[in-house]
Length: 294
Picture (tube, rainbow, N blue to C red):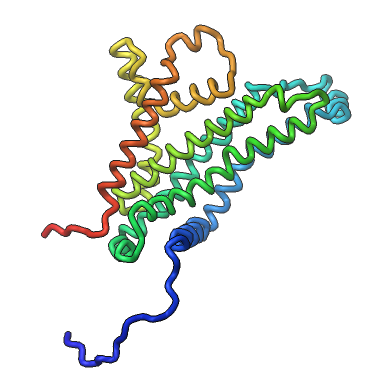
């Protein structure tokens, strides 16, 4: 179609500064991720373990409440608030975060791919790194709110409620929960975006996020059983994370339980390899152009 109107001129209005363009991507991605009511419901459900743990800490540090419970149940409940308690709480927070990731992560990127909007977005003064980091920032924000943030709140609450000095002696618990949660957030964020970048259908991408976590775990278990080795655990993400969380929090376990565990350095290298594979997949898929083969 020929254009007869020649009144088009160059835009001369204010130009957004480069430092604020990243914030635009984050703002729109956050709005898109939180727009669905199901996302809010799932987010609240992920916080239930923290609320239950908060109640347990309050009861265990309040003699009056414990005496009332002892009168109605015939004995005062006793739960030690130590490394093992926070290890269980961390697992109860981090595994529901997988469901939140599988729901939010694909939504952040599949829409751009399904509607062929990615080349248009990247044609603006926005780099591929900025695009991916914006999506990761939003996803990491949601996951932080249901993992290390409530975990540290519980740590501070226990330090306040304890009748004896507790926080300083158990600082390794706070550090372990924070580091363990950050590792989990990085892994889940990269994994979900990498899967979603290759699948344009959100429901399929959500299922594949779960499959990417649990299917290799089953394959690794079969490999260990057939080959009578422990190296198949390097692709068992649930086992890797549970072992790292326990070691970070310095939770002691019986020898028969830890006899076949791999050294920490190999578990960390396995996580780094999985993250590198996800980054490679994102680099292949997130492009400013799209090749259509007829």
